[in-house]
Image 1 (cartoon, rainbow over the protein chains, first blue to last red):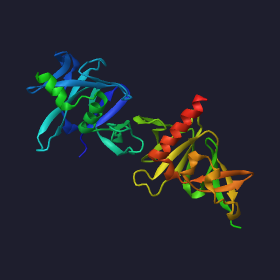
Image 2: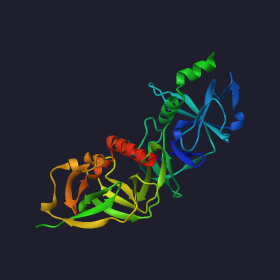
Image 3: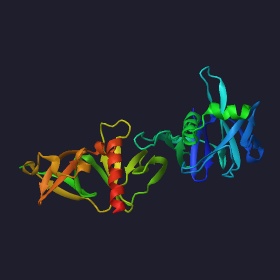
Image 4: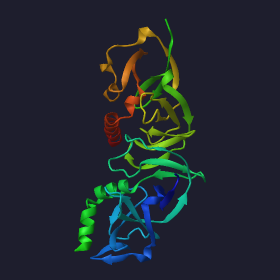
Length: 156
Length: 149
């Protein structure tokens, strides 16, 4: 199966499995609840996350990076039901056909690096592979705010 | 006596690799930055269908030495940036030294042997020993100490 979507964040291209994207919104759909930037997915408010192309800056609950779109990402829970987990601000989201891919050695990566591998697509563009679970672990580590804490704050 | 070919390169001091460890010498390699990685191993170069991790000890370099790491399933090759083109030297059994305490400490964990040539002891490195957390951490401390002088 070759179903990937490339998320562009400035100069960074991150390819994610297409089935992990449940919704794409314009940044103008962002609303603020308790001062936290959120996007609505079904009946849930999902805090918006953004990071820069070097992964050195991560913002939670604000829209500082002024990106154009918000993609809502999910991965299945233990019962294989999809749960919306993250809303990520991106400059572009486009379907790609991956022609080559490989792993990034763990020895290179800092702990919690969301990048799992590299790819080259049918247009010979290159970038990195990721998954929602890896992005969530990175964001949790960078912001020291867990998924549960993010949603508890919004529920209050 | 049997002549044994080595490739000698200048890192912080002279080191060498057995001929069979060196797969290729690449001139002016194009490197791809990988975000959120170790400061000395945050780039890769492309060779055929493979992306190869690069260890970079210098800001300025002109070559990349492509090294075989045959026992590493994660990456069968690594690359090391160097400023000067490596020199092919010949050695023989009589020049090998048993005592590795004379070589710089940074290279001792990665050295499989050493040879004495022209009043200096040159460590022969095992490439796979350069691509692990311990060696990269020690190398980073060394680079920081050198740049702070």
